[in-house]
Length: 206
Image (cartoon, rainbow, N blue to C red; front, side, top):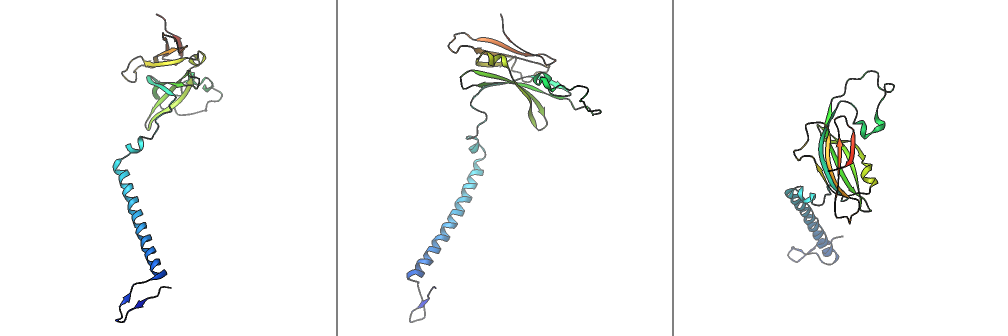
């Protein structure tokens, strides 16, 4: 219990002993809490003032083993995703709904993605990307087995043009690779998708 002392004139004397230490401790604790609160507000204000780039420095946009991404070509359809990327996705008359309103036409572009494997060679994936009101969406993805089978070391992937998304359906891209990383010359392969969706992967010949 805190004891209050007075002098001969009736003036209050300062606390001493345990009471004095308790008063000092409470004062210091209150000061520390106020300081911590102000420091937290100050740090939060600095974060907002600096904006999102301070956090973006630590963000990983894509895995490190993705070595090339090329967006090119054009597709448009009014039904299911391209059947050639999903051979088992075709519907027959027996399992089709009896009556359905036609789905709105979808359109988009293709992506060729080269992914480095632990052994050093590269697998190449073909993606079909739809242009949606909320942003691009991947419709389907398939590995191009021709490149995986030859254990290719991909050095570059280039579109037919650099003008952006093509106006005609299809895809034409060139893949530069080596089957032996010590080889001096590159092999040139093409990835072709025609207007009906057939995919061809073949070595370019002069």
